[in-house]
Image (spheres, rainbow, N blue to C red):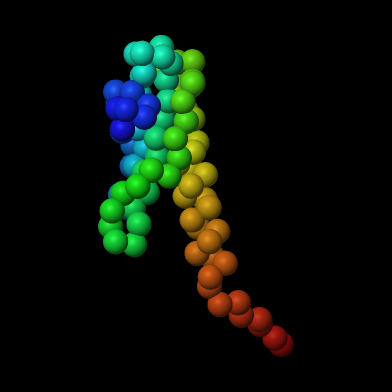
Length: 90
């Protein structure tokens, strides 16, 4: 991770541990970035979303949390779309 966005400052996870987010400062580029990792069907984590070029740690913290929330919302929508649709009649 350090080679992609810099040295991690803070980590976040969803309730299930299937999504991990971190933000970091890149001291070489003098900016901030974040990375979101998602667990696949085999239980292994892979990079899902990477962003660099943010101005400060506050922006990076907010952006990673918003991106994690969007990822969760997308997952819930996908699960809901896979559920069978029932029609109630009278």
